[in-house]
Picture: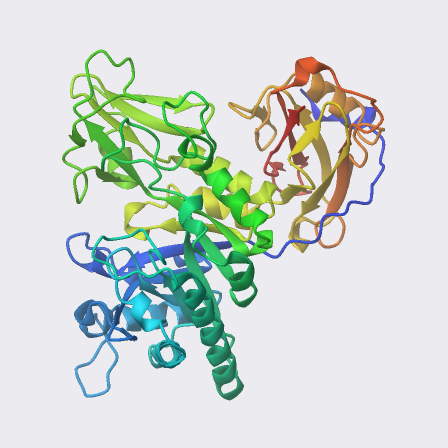
Length: 539
């Protein structure tokens, strides 16, 4: 498909969209304090240019205050250039301070608690005095160690988490009161220091646990919420093998409700949006590791949704858990392993029939599709656990490319009713570096993979009659604003307008329109796509 006939066939018509401008996307990566030991992963190894924020995991909660989680790793380990004189700063905290000097855009947060160290939260937030003491200890800790804020990772208020954790029914209200107290104390400290302090929480994807948060009351005092949309299935007692971080549900999965419909990344995000959280305060959680099962019967055709006996061995650092770097190097192309792609949940898996092992994980393709989901819904960005699992930035790279480099395509809705067809406003939002670029919005009913090669890049759509129509009719009634020039800020507006039709054909039910913008080459350089968006046809 050449460009010139397409361009000659369309007319310029810019339509006014109602989608608000989006702030630049954030990419938040967790750095585990224990990475410096067997993993031999240190702060200087972090690809800081591809991140916006680092959450240091973890500080502990002891006797009602924040404490160092690992004093040696945090503040004592010697690195070249450190000194041993009294008052000298060392350890990973000092490396983070230096990393921020080298990358001024980078911000760091101390993550408090985590799965292992959440047992002290309930007592620490139990009374007004306890909350004031705990909050002040965090503010002082952040300033002492030169962090930019705090990420509260309580797993979980009221119920859940380790069986040894102290929990109370009033944790729900006490957590809210504590976050309000912490924000107030950060604001008070800011009057002295002039700093802007960041506050976030790590929040569960499981809706039953999320209901133990007063989401509508806490999001106004938070800068964002990191949704832990992973570890939703695993070899810890679940009846069948499955995907630990599916983007969407699979109606064929042999599990009961609400797990079937709700335990997936998209449903988790929609749950928080439904509680009133602004999209730009939500981060979709991704994981840079896989979960493996073994002891699967030989009768299983591909290992998926099968019974099993144990977590898969050997794992990278523990049974059943495999770093992505390990999977890419030693499993994906290894003899005996077969790689599959699940078209419904949008994630891959590995199956070894002779070893009776199944591993579900994220790869560059599934991470890319999760980045597209972030863009489609105008979310604030993405979070991932954790940096040492992706040593070659094979997964971080797609997040950076799609969330921070490419022009983003947003939609005002993700579905169109067959009975009451409507207009879907589209918004192209980029940077001044893209100003003046000619764009063409294309649509396809044939999905995003493998995509269509164009001059300078790959358009993540497949050619079909709808793509041909969207090219030929760009600027017309169905595709207003489908062809034009990005303004001085790199932005433009367009639409998919189905409103002229009284009804749409019932044959469309269950199908999706995938829409993507192609930016034609500048005077020097190559063409490039925006993210695609998916608009589903519903009754």
